[in-house]
Structure formats: C-alpha cells, structure tokens
Amino acid sequence: MSKTDIRSLILPELQDEMEKMGEKKFRALQLYEWMHKKLARDFSEMTNLSFSLRESCGERFSLTTLKPVKVQESKTDGTKKFLFELPDHNLVESVLMRYHHGNSVCISSQVGCRMGCKFCASTLGGLVRNLTAAEMLEQVYGIIRYTGERVSNVVVMGIGEPLDNRENLLRFIRMLTDDKGLHISKRSITVSTCGLVPEIKKLAEEGLQITLALSLHGVSDEKRRQLMPIAERYSIAELMEACRYYFERTGRRITFEYALAGGVNDTREDAEGLIGLASALHAHVNLIPVNPVRERKYTASGKEAVRMFQKKLEDAGINVTLRREMGRDIDGACGQLRRNYDSAGRG
Ligand code: SAH
Image 1 (cartoon, rainbow, N blue to C red):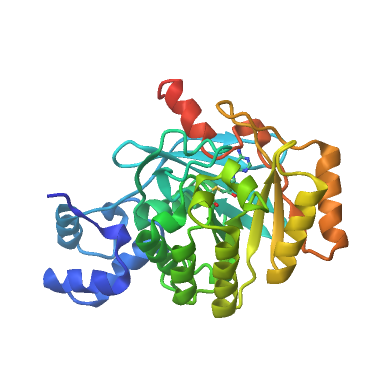
Image 2 (image 1 turned 120 degrees about the horizontal axis):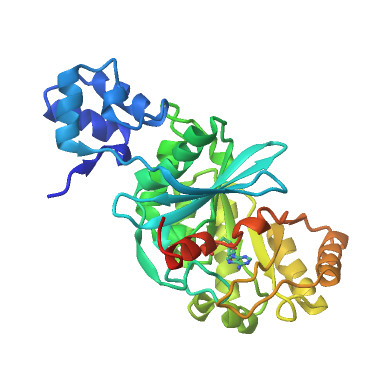
C-alpha cells in the first residue's frame, strides 16, 4: 500500500495522525509549519522534532517535494518557466511572472487535460491524472525555494482544468491561504475554467473570495463550439447564468479570458457581442493574442485587429486588459515546454 502524502494533509488531519502515533497534538502544528511555512524538503530538516519522530514520519508518510528539472528565463521580461518532475516522473509546468505589484505564479492542476480546446497544447495528449494538493502547493514552494523571492499572487491557469479536479483544488486553496502556511490572500488567487457549469455553481457555494476567470473565446454558441468542445455541453446562456450566480454569491467580479485568433473571433461583431456579455456581468476582460502551437492551425490576430478590438471594448466602458506577452521566447504557450522536453528525450 502506498504511504499517505503528508504534505496534502490539512492541520486537523495531521493532528489525528499524530494522535494515532501517540504523539502530542502540538507536534502537528510544528510539522505543518515546517512543510508549509519553512518549506522543508525533507523530514531531516525539521530539527526541533525528535530524531525518532522524524524517523517514524519517514516510515509512515511520503513527503512530496518538487524540484525543477528545467528552468527557462525570458531575456525580455524576467519571466521564468519551470518544468517540474512529479514523484511518478510525470511532468508539469509552472510560470513565475514579475509585475510591479509583485510576483505571480501560474500553476498546473492536472497532468494533461481532457477538455480538448482546439488552440491549446496542454490537451494534445489527453488527461493523464489529477494533481494532488501537495503537487499544486509544491509548484509554488519550489519556485520560492529556487528564487528566494516572495509570491503574492497565484493563478491556476497552467496545464489542466482545475474544476475537473475540485477536491484537490479546494484543499490546495485552503492550505495556500492558511495563516499557518504561506497565508496568501484569497483575493490574490485566480482559478481559470473552460466553463464547467455545474462546477462553477458548486464553487460559488463555497463562498471563497477567489477570482473566477472564464475562458470565453467566442461570443456565440456556434463560434465557441468551433474552438472548445465543452461548448457542445453548455450554452453561453447557461454559462452566463452560472457566472451571475458566482458573482452574486461571492461578490467577486468575473474575468472573461478571450484569446484573439486571427480571422476567427476578432471582428467588430465579436467585439460587440463581448461588450454585451461583459457589461451584463460587470466582468473584466483579459485579451490574449493566441500563442501559436505547432500542432494547431490558429495564429494571433494582427496588431491592428487587436488594437481595434481593445479600443471598442474600452469605448464601451469595459474594464479590459491586454495580456502582456510574457515569455514568448521561452515556449510561452501552456503545455509547450512539457511537450518539447518530452519529445526531445528527457535530460
Ligand atoms: N483549463 C483552464 C485553465 C488552463 S488554460 C481554462 O480553460 O481556463 C489558461 C488560459 O489559456 C485559458 O484561457 C486558455 O483558453 C488559454 N490558452 C490555452 N492555449 C492558448 C494559446 N495557445 N493561446 C492563447 N491562450 C491559450
């Protein structure tokens, strides 16, 4: 039987484990802080615990620690992309972005993805498995250990569909925001979804103060279906209702992500459709020129089209940002680093 992964346990669970081992309850807090505040890599670092307790923890539990197997740094904007190897040798990628308001880390939530979006590299090999809470936390911790820098924002926008891995995602958020750990503010966490309507509603009911980003990419059901298979299952009307529910339950404005693909979804009519949807929900719009993926046919909209699109939204009073094209020179698109590393043969 495989060992319990101790870094995925919340504090009350860890207290139960200590009780089972005949240890005092406060040992759980010491262990927890070693793992989630001091970011220990190994039980041997936990020097205020007795040698015998460290030994028995090592026998009973596994402690997930991720080390980057590859780090690429952008020469233009300081963005760093990390490839992490998981305990079972699968690979995921994470990105550190430096903004004037602080460091932001983008993490993966699954190995691969089963959502099948037509422009995305992460979904090409399908879904392999969900990540555990520890594997999500460790992407953040591994980057902090590597850079020695603080992280103020975390976005779940890397490989995978986070709402397809809800239990582990919620555990991850709970632990990341815990004052016994890194204590990152819920308002500084963004979860991005391709639009799983029932899951958006369930997340709304958790009442967490996190930002929900919806990958919209098309303003009619017909257009959205060309780009995203999930649009066959849920209509835009259903999606907007779920987003409204999220906004009402949490008070948090939704962000629409909109990848601009040349000649596909970047016309004036598309902009007008997007204005209608965004104003109804007071949503923020994040425009992302498509990052071309070798296996896919889509290309980014031209500069002129992007400018026209953005201006139209701004003129209509929409809160719009154009995603800075960070790290283009380092396999920027989601899932590209992992694919290139694997196909080139590891190491
Ligand atoms: N599964 C989640 C989160 C991961 S993708 C989701 O769909 O939202 C994060 C964002 O990057 C999504 O908006 C996704 O649609 C977008 N994206 C994926 N591949 C892209 C590409 N090649 N160019 C531009 N945006 C892309």
